[in-house]
Length: 113
Length: 113
Image (tube, rainbow over all chains, first blue to last red; front, top):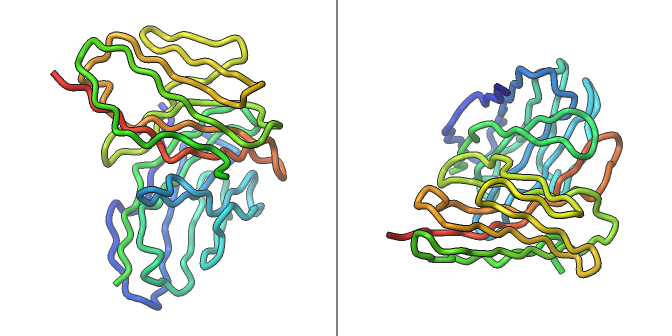
């Protein structure tokens, strides 16, 4: 079974703090993704990576950065957290190519106060 | 116009009913299509891929109409356990080597006794 794990299920941070969200997958997938999910807006892609040290902006990259130093690990960084970044963050991974299923982690509910 | 559009529902149906969801997409160059299921407070999981010829998996049937740019999901003999949010997902094509999926906001289904 594919397993995607995320470092925290719930996280509370203060405005201006630097926040790290970690994601690890155990299936040797090339592609990894970070989404945020908000009511009425659905899942929106923040960043994705198709190889180690490679990254591409998604639809809403502003205020975020990512790091992929190892194939199995993809980190999302909020350089200076703001209240409008309060959301559910979901990591996903997939094999390379256009038709493969994306497997999601359980999500991190981040609250910025 | 949203890239992927769904009726948010909720669709409240009695157990045993047949229910259908539609989803429209804006990019005629879209290459692959999926339905994901998301239970309350859980991560999305692939329900089924949608093929040009249509496909069936037990009580679930998915259809694609490229000319009208919509996909549909039909659930027959609804069960209580089918209660979930159904996400329409479209692959707009490869970008930088990755497979970027665009998610609809989901249609909520509630199956009642």
